[in-house]
Image 1 (cartoon, rainbow over the protein chains, first blue to last red):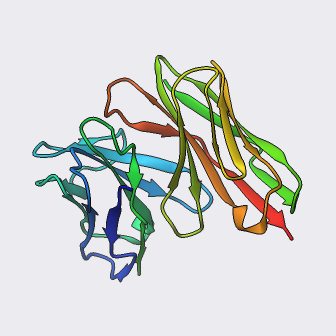
Image 2 (image 1 turned 180 degrees about the horizontal axis):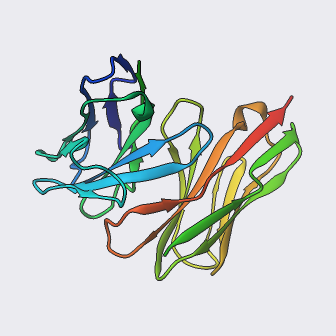
Length: 116
Length: 111
């Protein structure tokens, strides 16, 4: 089956620093990547959608200068949280989809970000 | 705007006690309805995709059904390892459009 590898699984960073989260599709070409944020006991909230080689489309209320998304290849997308603050602490999850949707929406295992 | 409502929010079952989880949806042009399982601290794990009313899919103790307004995830004779949060999501629009998720149902199965 389709596999999406997400790293790191946990990260602690100091307030004001930047953190990069990687999401890789291991056995298919991810033409579209979705990045979600999940608060405790809440559902997934879509932050942005990116198509390979194009700029990401951000959901309303998501700061694009704070959450930088790069999707430069068909197997790798990154989310960089810039100038992190404690309120950015959350669980971040990526999801990848191939052009024809043959592999559905495959999710990574998530990254727990704690900003201290 | 697409909307997905799941009920109940939480469900506690005794091992072997069958039950159903509900997912009601409002969407313009349903392309697919998805069920996922999510364990604490993990990403969602795919269970089923349903595409049209009347469709049913089964996997082990789980069976998903779909009508024009809602979907049910039936759990037959659950085991403690079925304890998890079950998420329902709908896809509308283009082939690679986003999923809209419900808030999830937390299932606890007591031995």
